[in-house]
Image 1 (tube, rainbow, N blue to C red):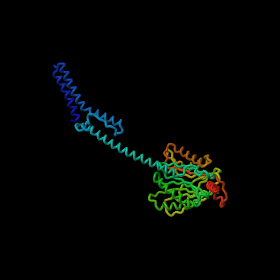
Image 2 (cartoon, one colour):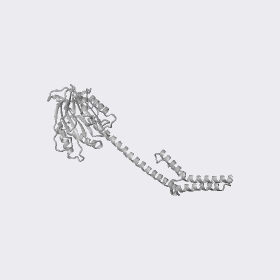
Image 3 (spheres, rainbow, N blue to C red):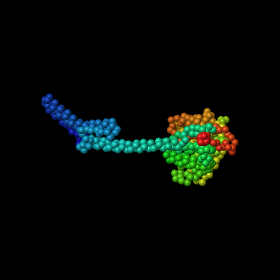
Image 4 (cartoon, rainbow, N blue to C red):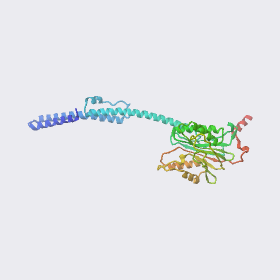
Length: 401
């Protein structure tokens, strides 16, 4: 029965009682009281029929709001909602049915949310492991070669996401991998893979491995990049590429041989305070086109000179209004900034970028590598090009005793 009909019946009953009372005003007080009690009973009966299911719905809604875990013990009531919906073919019954359906959909949504949250947490754990692996692949820190007093090196890498495509590497080249005679040539590189996230990180790992393996058999930066480009261009279905600066520094005389494959130009801060860009381009980014032959250039680092390399995450850092940090701001900073070591150069730049960004989200991976030549140049071609490892000599002395 529709609610409108029930209300009509209730009002009709009250009107009938009022009519009877008005027509037959000879009712005794007791009879009049009886009629009033009858009217109140009828009104209460119909009110209960209307309000009781609504009260139960209210209690159920309050219970749901306080029990976010629907796996907890069920809310119970003397009258089952299904019974109400079945025996109330009116608006109340329809409301109860809609409420039941809403609860079912809520449970399904919570189940889907739990599944999504679990998958997200698992992915975040895997990405965190990937980040740790990537960071361990990179030689973080400035004390990787503590026995070399002729060189200071410092680097930093801050991915925009959990993992990124920027990378750097540095190592000494050993002639025929000999532990006794150590070649005074220091190899280093800074690269920036296209894209971000996991694909860029995987591509970065491949590039880094190819470069290092080739650098052990060839000291020409041009030859190394030519070989790596040929390998990755031959099988690159996703068309990824990497910009790269690769250099080889001879610690005997400060000679630097380098190749730039579409990368941001590094800068040399000379001891007299001048800033010299290494802005020669020797070919496009690696992975774009097969058959390219890269070139190389030479320069010389004097004692105390600092070479600063970086990725475009520095110059293209953005503030909240999407203004770029820019090459001009970097040049001005490196020219006028106060720094006397590789570490100070990087700390000065990264702090300037951080202050420039403010509250803006980091838009790209940010990587910097700086080295300072502290050696005293000697004439090339002399035996000083090869230095005997102190560690190896100590071992030999122990064997001769």
